[in-house]
Image 1 (cartoon, rainbow, N blue to C red):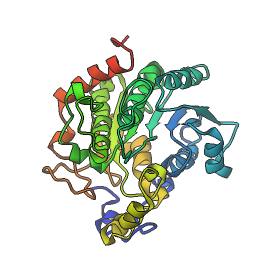
Image 2 (image 1 turned 60 degrees about the vertical axis):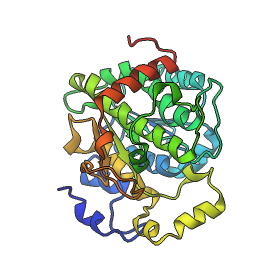
Image 3 (image 1 turned 90 degrees about the vertical axis):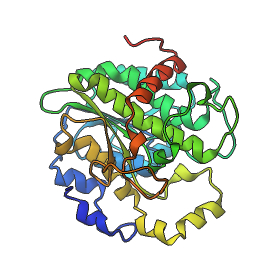
Image 4 (image 1 turned 180 degrees about the vertical axis):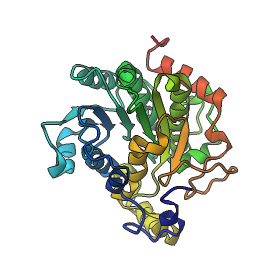
Length: 335
């Protein structure tokens, strides 16, 4: 049983007794324990990215943080931004070239990375939108950009692993991955055959996040590079910027949503737990929920549920997605 099980047993809304990201750092006794280590966080212009950065900064690590709008990110980070051990780097997740440039920028400054947090994302894009490369916007932003970023940073992540702290990749997914019923066919990731649905497209991108973490563990876990994915919970952030005000208000006024809703500080807790917890040392290929490894259950579409469902783990689809993703980002094989 998780040390946080009792706190999550009967949630009472944002800012209740459930842990915050900073509490995780304190409970794991990680203050100033990663001095000299490099940590990468994507999407720090608002919400969970900011709170993840706030907590991981307390470890003493050097933070390299990406955002599409650097001025907005610097404003959001506010007084936690320390230019002596933090750097903001431009990265547009809709552009694979921008991802390559950001990775090159980071690798010009460090050849060893200990933690990569894939946090940036988008959801509820109402109409089918394609990137310049012809990829569906949610799949491209949430999965392909992070996949390419990981592949480019992989040598540094392997080099940054040590016996005292093995490298970790933490990917923010969603309970929505449960609604995908597995990965779609390879020839329709981008709805080339029609049938676009905002919720379905988001769910597909989120199961891709889970499968990416699972496959990283399968390929590199034995080399000291581990990966987990997670459901952060219900948090009011700019992730819902494509939703109408009416949709947002209807959601936030739902009594069950109000009960389970977390503050951004609480929403980042599972991310930070995945990044630093002793319990996960040397482990990966796991879905996390409420600062614990998610229990395994049967299939259901409950958007408030956090359990893993049968298709959360599927070696065949994980391998297929990896192969297809390499091709989509222009890497015919791994070096």
